[in-house]
Amino acid sequence: MSLGNSLSKSRKKSGYSQEEVAEKLGVSRQTISKWELNETLPDLYQSKKLANLYNISLDDLIDIDFEIQEIQKTIENISDEKQNKINWTKVWSKKYPILSTYQDEVDIEYYAIKIKELLKNLKKDYGYSDLDACLVLKDILAHVWKDKK
Image: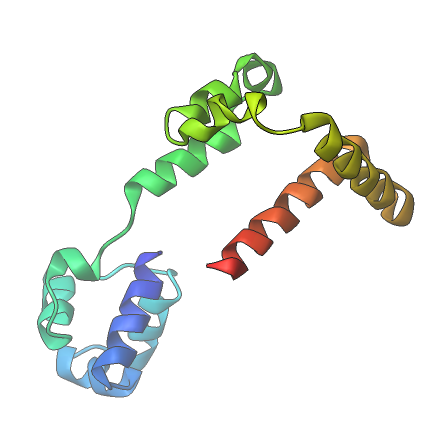
């Protein structure tokens, strides 16, 4: 979550309008808006006042998940050549052991035929490339999984 989103959510959760926060901090409503839109950042002194006003810790107020940002940046910057060298099944098996064992239990060819048909349909119906069809199918599967939770 961006700092602006965190500021906006915290303000709303506390029941304040931008005008009320601006008045309490001695700044303009436009300044609060710019902070919440990530156009500018409050200084440390103002951030501490915001945290006190919202009755949360400064850490909670500025909770930007740097680990997630680092992962996203790594994904964006990895070259196709390096990505092709990674054994993704092995990597993800460390977190999800089923990925290293299911091959002996599941009729892979049965499911592969069904998946190939879905990929073929995506390519035919929407003109997707092989890679795009695979990515769309993967994303659909992720949505199905998320909706199931």
